[in-house]
Image 1 (cartoon, rainbow, N blue to C red):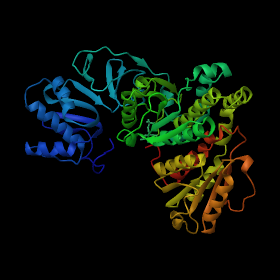
Image 2: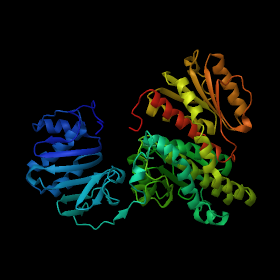
Image 3: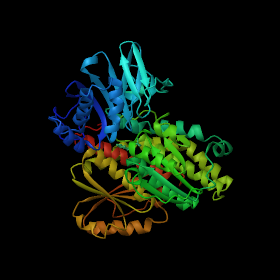
Image 4: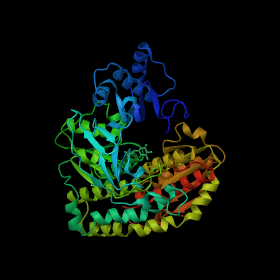
Length: 522
Ligand code: BG6
């Protein structure tokens, strides 16, 4: 397992054993330094730099008190630690039993034939079973050869609902692709079709299936990583087309900050592929505790966020195995676009004719995705141009800045090239000093209202010697002398462009990482 504390070496790797207890851990124990000091006073010595070894020592310390049985020790443990954990635990005095528990880190039980498996996600055990149980916070599982018992936090035996995944093993395999990331990008056509098919049939059914947004005057979109970048696109759409004031908040900040809620007119939208991201879950609970309506845009059915939010809109991305999200991000953007269309309709900002035409455009959008995917040579050519660079800039204005953010994250996340996204007009206020001869600047220019302004900014970087890669639409395409390379998206309805623009950037990031020999999926 990847070490979150200390170097990734054998000593810091799981499992950890202290005294008579052995554990594996996913999550972060936030008060581990404090606990470590207390335990050192009790005579504990630590071999690793990890929080996990400390968690293990807490369990051993409780065990040595001889006050409780092993189930009770695990219950007691959760009162000592702060943070998130999913644990697999073995006690030396009960070697035929595997215990597991969780708090704010995901944990499922895979129900196989004559075997039960613990994992963070069903994808990890799909080879063995399609049936699973999602565990709640502070549930404790006791697994023996022939028994699977789940206890709630009061240590009462509880009966959990069994779930079955609606995708199969082939989807968790590469299916001929070199990497999961590439496979998942190529699945965008199909998953978009599946998601749109579920929500968009006739205009009437679409309007019925979408939630009612009429009472909301303010929206907080809360998410992490790429899901937050999808939220930035949502903000632009909700504000510009539906006239609804929207803020986009990073979940790890929002959960701790002072939020001014207005109960009658505020909606909190949580976006999460997994539905299990601890910070996003905390924000959902914060909104609910404050009596605020919540809507989740989630991929994983029955995940914590899906279960706890007032309303859920599911994207149908299937399983995402590559660590860098691609198809789920695309669908999050698609769903926000559908939400925006519903809000526009409610506010009479779009008439029936345009709405019908836009919904039809959505239905045919998978074909446009296919055309974009087909331009592989173009993306490889650009990847070859930039893969030896160490600093790359993405610039854009308005919605194009939101797209730049995700393009830049994708690139740095998997290729390890330092990359930054800048609002095109802001670059000149300092950072432009980093633009030198042949610095690569990827310029996103799809916004019809702002493109002339973006051109001025591209010219500024060009004047400092940058090599410019331009991503634009057919209607804004021209014989620009400043573009060293150009990607022109296919003709598409204007509402689809922000969703389509990311695909070339995902493929460029993939090709760059491959040229650099990176471990792309991990
Ligand atoms: C990160 C992933 O760790 O979590 C990102 O690498 C993802 O791809 C982010 O966007 C948020 O995850 P989720 O499941 O809440 O969408």
